[in-house]
Length: 248
Image (tube, rainbow, N blue to C red; front, top):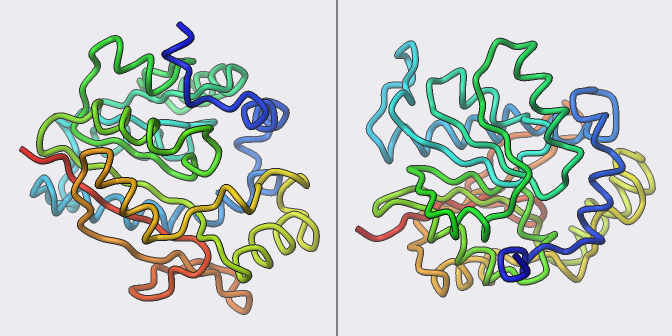
C-alpha cells in the first residue's frame, strides 16, 4: 500500500480536504475553477474529438470511451464528460471529496464511478483508459515524474493524456499566488507553492521521460476586463495545458 501512494503529498491533500464541501459553490473557494471550466472543457473536448475522430455535434460523442479524471475533486470535469457519453472514473486522494462528488452526480442523474484512490493504486489494479484527464494536479504531488509515469501506465496504447498546470516565473507568482490568494482571495493562502510550479518545457520533458509523446500545448489566459478565460496559442506564461499520446 505504501508503494501505491508514493507520489501523494499529504500536506497538499489536507488543503483540499478542508475545502471539500465547497466544490459546487460557484462563488466559493473553487470559484477560479468554475470560471476556468468552460475553457478547460473546450480544450479537452476538441482534443478528444480529434484524437478519436468523434463528432462533437453527436448526441453522445464520447460513447465507448473510458475516461479517468484523476484528482477529480467534486466532479467539475467528470460530470460533463459523462454527459458526453464517456464511461467515467473519477479518482481523488482526498477522501472527503468523493462523497461530495457522488451526491452531486446522483442529483444530476449521472452514473460516475468515483473512488478514493491514487494513480499508483489504479496501476496496481491493472486499470486501463482511453483518456486520462490530469488537470491542476501535477503541481501538488511529491514526485511529478513518478506520478506522470503512473498516468502513462493507465493509458491504453494510443490513449490521450491531457495535463494542465501553472508555469513557474515571476508573472505566475504574481497572478496565481499574490493575485488569487492574497488580493482576490479566490483561494486560501498557501494553496499553491510557487517552487512546485512547472514550466512548459519541464513538463514536456517529464512527459517524454514518462513514456508519452507530447503533441500540443496552449495557454489559459484570464482577461480581467471581460472577467473570462480564453485559450491562447502562444501565452503559456501562467496557466497552460498540454496534450500527449501513448505510443501504439
